[in-house]
Amino acid sequence: MASTQGCGPWDVGSIPTYRLKMSLKLYNTLTRKKETFKSIKPGFVGMYCCGPTVYNYAHIGNLRTYIFEDILKRVLIYNGFKVKHVMNITDVGHLTSDADVGEDKIELRARREKKTAWEIAKFYTRKFFEDIERLNIIKPDITPKATEHIKDMISLIKILEKKGYTYIIENDGVYFDTSKFKDYGKLARLKIEGLKAGARVGFVKGKRNKTDFALWKFSPKGVKRQMEWESPWGIGFPGWHIECSAMAMKYLGEHFDIHCGGVDHIPIHHTNEIAQSEAATGKKWVNYWLHGEFLILEKGKMAKSTGMFITLQKLIDDGFDPLDYRYFCLNAHYRTQLRFSYKALEDAKRGFEHLKNKIIEVLSIKNKGKKSTIAYEKRFMEAINDDLNMPKALAIVWDMLKDNEVRNDLKYKAILKFDRVLGLKLDKIKIEIPKKIKELLEKREEARKKKDFELADKIREEIKKEGYVIEDTKEGPILKKAI
Ligand code: AMP
Ligand code: ZN
Image (cartoon, rainbow, N blue to C red; front, side, top):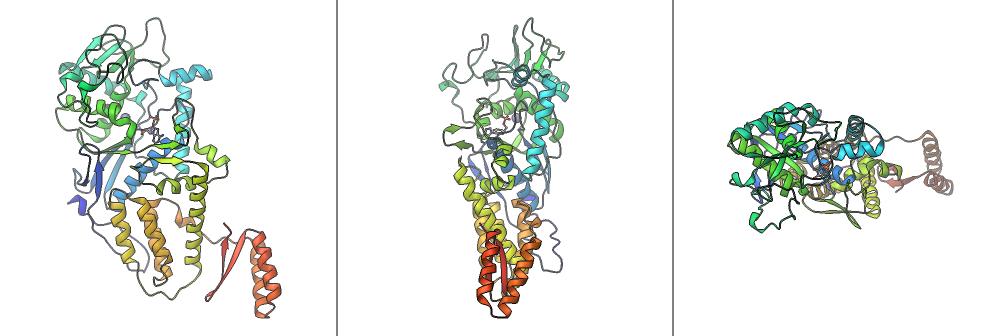
């Protein structure tokens, strides 16, 4: 069975390795339960994640969601699955309001920046890919652009039309009639009757139900949009929700395993994706829906639309490494809100430095430990397989590193293995000692041999000024970066 596949081929030299088999549990928003994951095809997972709307830089909240999705994918791979990961690029059709009114975010930005909508989309798409690379997020296998899939969207709307799910509002667009879809709102457990008029979808004249949504919007009369296409219903552009359904189906089929996004997508975007996809195919669309909680600022919500946001570049300019931010995110469970502050990020950075130092120590000295790492490997896998409990997984990494009874060379091998999930580039840690420090170290060793401890201490102070500390151990002195 797929869920009990062994782990990947751990090629770790001559050291004995362990193939652990364990069930993977994931929290499914559809059922509000942690469920044992079973893939549709044995050993293979199809996974779709809602990607960026490319009218601005991604903010670190968006990036938290992409980090969570990356961890999920890595955990699936760690469990032996082959993953096909699709993430769309929304380069048209996402309006400034979820109510099917307002402007297209990209066209609006283009006007403000005096650029074309195509230039805006291209620029921010490139910036998005740069950001995910800097965070060591594995690039999705397929990153389809909405503007390159208009035909697929029109085909899907035609199917819905043929099945009687659509109606047209003159001078506005083609709408999905949510009253015709029996299970509408099942993901968000919406109480349709209880929705206050306007609270959910705003006022669009001619909507039959409060929850109906646009599949195709007509270009406004007398306005020449930069991004618009012919369609059987009139010139216009696709609705944001139909984009995801069409692209997900094109690359993953009419029924696939996992769909992800941030929690904000549950009540509207994903609810509508489900309605139109299942209405079109007449069957269940996605088995597992996973949602990442928000990153929040001390002062409240972080949002691209309000401009109140922090980018990854800003963190870099403030002296942080992108992986400090990744480490910061891993210290919170993806289903809990995470409050961002520079103080909290500083703490995470310090913790990450400690971790790297500890690994350097493990690399640089042979200890007398005899125990293997198997118990820790088991606990690590239990943690990640328990709905991606990364804070616990990190605590286990620490426990193992501190355990003097475990052989250091084995610890290092296990760290490399764990890093396939953590993605913290722990394999890149090298002991790079600057020439000056090396010379000082040698001088200090000479002084110690001659029992000139006064001089040795003086040199230790000099080394400290250069940002390194020396710890004298039974196995000899070890050098650490001062934190
Ligand atoms: P967008 O580019 O606005 O479509 O959002 C891209 C992804 O980021 C979506 O999955 C959103 O649900 C998610 N997202 C938006 N704001 C936040 C936030 N503050 N924290 C975490 N994820 C977010
Ligand atoms: Zn989507």
